[in-house]
Length: 624
Image: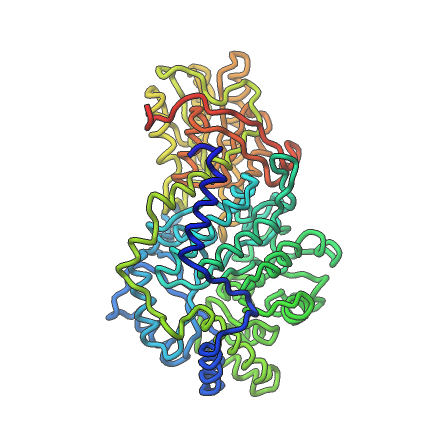
């Protein structure tokens, strides 16, 4: 799609969508008479145990799950016995061996849209009260479900400078998610990523604050958050602001440790809180808190925000006036699970003011823990009733008391497809950012018969289960330059092999290096191995005298570029996998324009807002 047609296309898409769906559920919006009556009658019939059960949200995987299985029976028992209020759906997983010499097996897989929808329907049929279902669809349904649309990470949207694209992604995500039975999206990420060493937020954030856009205007993180919330909820899905009150300035991953945010209240008001305020003003139906220490707001030593009434009830509920649902983050994360039993953790989270306890490892223990706290007078029954009522109101606002099942025949019509993928491709291509081009190598001008060395440079080879790096980049480059030699480098590459690559690099007519550095939740890693980074610098120096074109394309963590300042040309994608690789090849080949702008600063290299532009100079391979 030509850039000049973007505004017209988006306007047409919005008008078409608005004609199909006219639904906007701000957190405190009044219900109609029938919905109000359903909430009142349902709440009155509930016992204390049932009201507590509404606050519990266990998880399941969306791969195929037969009814006659231990896994489904476990889910069914939580519905029948604990009367849980909903579920969070993940993708899939497979067991991996705990071997020492080859720790490269990947455990993560994607779920199935039809399996997800069928499982949701079966669980809904078992539940007397409709279930409120949720998932992390930060970058689209394809983040968890195979066949769903996968958009680039949020930082790529920031690089486009166009919050209309975020709104369009939200619209598509809402339609696809509701088709499979998911009601709550744990998105958008409202964190401001201003710490280059953040291993858990990173590209999941729209940026570090105000983002310079063409024409001199700014579209900050708050603007993207607001647009996403409005569009998602206008099309039938509840938005969740996370991770309150801000997880962007930490270098510890809360999946494996307890991060500390040391800033005082004035700094939080200036940097961390504005996106959350904007999201609340836009009508966000939910907020997710974070497993972080924030001493300026919660003075109790070692008490994370998850257990802080000062933050959850005081700041969020009273000061900011938030009236919607407050979720914990996953209670299986080590930041809380390591030192707190499930019953104690659930009770402390509810005492702090949470409405829904997410991804509880043991629903029975959580219910018992919360009920015990009520019986001891630590939590009032009035608080439990208020949370149960908020949960029921959210369900009523979604219309679940009228229809809680989804039509399986409609899944294939609404989930995925070429039209939705075209939007994702548009975002991906507009996000590509050219940081530098010292040898005027972008786009590559070498002839089709040129000898090209392609280096697929990995942080580490383990964990690439969903998509192997360079599986699109290498064959697409080979279509354009058939004499391509592809080599993979990682922390497992022997020093002699690194030396060989460096020694022979200047025999090629051009060099393309794809640098894959992840900021993966739970990995604790976000760097290239030092010898691998060094060999790239050696190649840059060795090819400098002959002015051999050398271009590095960074996938994932954009801050990795700061450790390779001598590379002569750098492109950022802010993303991984097939779509990002396809966009990078088109940019390298001059088949797509380049115009992205840094949504974050790269210390020692470039400020936020930096980016070189290039025009498209040739038709795409498909059009030739």
